[in-house]
Every structure is written in C-alpha cells, then in structure tokens.
Image 1 (tube, helix red, strand yellow):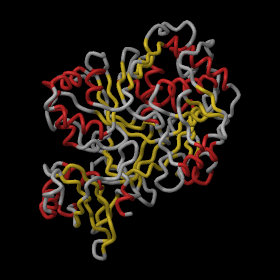
Image 2 (tube, rainbow, N blue to C red):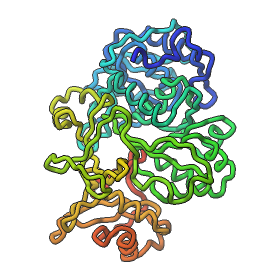
Image 3 (tube, one colour):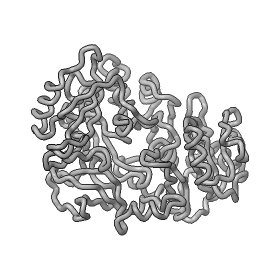
Image 4 (cartoon, rainbow, N blue to C red):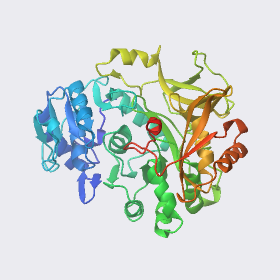
Length: 492
C-alpha cells in the first residue's frame, strides 16, 4: 500500500473527473486534492484532529486532509450528548476540531482550536507518506456496554478492507455510489466515502435519505451502487410496488448493498419481486471493518425469483485475507458446516483494528490469542457462507437445553402479515432457563395479532421450541442513529 488515494496524486488521470457530490456541491478529484492539500498544510503536525462529521462535503474534505497529512481523525457525531462528547474529547485529546465556518459547535468544543474547512481552498497536492501501521481514524463505539471506546484503525486496515471489497463487489473507477449514511461511522465514512475515493470513482451523498433522492441519483443521475441500512430499504420496499420510477432506478443499478443490521426477508422479497434485483448483505464491525459479503453477481429478472436470494441472516463468504472460525463457549472450534451448530465468530486478518485507545485491558480481553472475539453468533452453511443468528450478549437465548438465535425468530415473525417490526430477547424462566420474548410493533396498533397465533406461526416455520412464550406490544422499537435495535432499552 503506497497511498490510500492514488486518484488524488499529481498527474493522475482522474483529476478532472467528479469525486464528490453533496446536493448541488460537486468537487472533482483535482478540486478535492487542492482543498484537502490546503487543509492538510494547516493541520500538519497536529497530534489528532476531531472532525465535526455532518453529512456534507466539508466532512469528506476534512477526513481526506487528515489522512493526507498523516494525522489521525476522530469523527464526531453532531448529535452526541454533552457527557459522551466530553468523554470522547478527554479520551482522544484532539489538538483541533475541523468544521464548516457556519457550523454551530456545542460548548463542549469551545476549548479546542477551531480550523474552518473551505472546500474551495487551493493548496499544493500533498504526497502521502505515513506508515501503513499508523492510525488513520479513531472511531468511537456506540457505548452500549459502557463508555464509548475509541477504536484505532490503521491505514493498513482501511486499505485491506476496501481492497477486499473491490474484489468481492467488482468495484471499479466507473462506479457511482449513492448513499445517505452518516459520516461518523465506518459504514458511511470508510465504505461510503473513502471506498469510492480509493477506487477513483465518485460519491453522490443524498444528505438525508429519501426515496425521491434514490430515484434521482440512481436513475437519471447515473448511479451504479446503492448503500443503505435496513430502515432505508424498508422504506424502499414500502414504496417500490407503486413507484415505476423507483423500480427502473433499482433495476438499473449494478449493486444494492445493505449493512449494519439484518435486512428482513419480507423486504428482500418485495424488492426482488418488483425489480428483479437482489439486495446483498455484508458483515463487519467498527473493530474489524468488513469481514464477509455476499458476492456481486450479474443478475437479470429472468434469473432471479422471489425466495431464491440468500437465506435471511446470510452474509456470504469471508472476504480475501479474512480468517474466520466459530467457537463454543469453552473455546473449542466448531468444525461443522451444517447450518445448525451455533458458535461465536472469531476473526483475524489485516483488516483488524490496532487497539482500543487508552484501554489495554479492553484490548487484551477482546482477543483470544490472535483471534478477535466479535461477540456475534453464527452458523456455517454447507457452502461455507456465514449466517448470523444474533449477538452473544443479547441475542443468544438458552431455552430448554437449546441454543437459539433471536435473529431467525425475528425473521419468522416479520413474515407474519400483521407484524411491522419485532425484536426477540430472552428473560429468566424457572423451568426453561430462559423463555423467548417477542416485542412486536403491529401493523394495526388498534388490533394487534393474537399472541398464540404468532407463537404458532413461528413453530410452523421453524420448530416448536423456538416459539415465543411471551409477546409484548410496542408502538415503536428503540434504535440508534444507524437504525440498529437497542434491545437492552426494551428491558429498561
């Protein structure tokens, strides 16, 4: 890995090509190189920089400038609360904050020198010279099990993960990526911004997600790839049956990718039925970047039928360079590829993070020798593909002597016509050890489905021991900024 962004180098044949578009604001590779070069010169020598990560071209320029300068960037979620922001700043100790001139920053950032990002600035091109093992980004976890931890991602890890996706998705400089993901997580920032820039392609960021924006950028806008999370694809699935322009836009895309959480099978099927396209899923974490993906394969409406896509929860095969194993609770490796034997995913490879910042204890606890403990539970199918069944901490239910993944029960319940959303958890039971609890958002909140009917539905599709013993109804489920369910909040 010589540079992260060959297309920004002086003499590149991409300098006149579009790199970024946010709304009406467009930057070519030459303009991006000039703006990032000017900013890189201003922050050169700074230990770390915080980036006020709004969904704008300013954020992209700021992060690219930091990477060109060899300065680790700490993306900040603009919606972070006071206490969490103070923790992140105290832990990462940035020397400055990069933000747009018009951005209103919270009082918690007032003690940091502010460097305004000018996307129209002009500076000399910067030659990347940082050590591949040096920190590129410090991305903070969501803090579901305590204060957020700073995940140190090296330049090597970023490059290795993006290059593995180049192979899996046949990603080229001709691709135009459309998305509306936030830029303070690895999905939106690393995959959604740095990925296209490393390939020499272009990004169309919608700012805020809308079906109309997807139609505009995938249709007449010439987009070839769409990245989203299940909440976005759910809205697309709701609209696709009555929107011919959306059908044409999706059918014309080369690749539709969903990540950050499992996409329910019902949404898979509705999109495939209307467009002939299969949404592919991938699997990764902040600490590992991307681990697995369903591969990109040529598709035509004639070759795709409803129900022929990947099994719910399937995230495909490990990417190039990723070694993956499943282990029992006692650390014994599971050799079976039977689609039934559940174990925790452990991984190793060049895509792994370096450490948790200032947390050697947490870093050591996260590894079993060279293997990173993901905390995710899965099975291996006979073809080697990985199927996720849930998180070890919240989604593995031990009931009546069985190990049951919450994810497959959730998918079964989502197949019921009267269920809009669902979460499945376990709670103590004196007889079973744990009983299965379904938290259901009904399609009609005035007339929710009968609990016994839902239990019978699951027993019919899966097995009797997987039926929920308790059903609780909710108007909505708690989710974080990426649309992930926050199951612990249900019990709170």
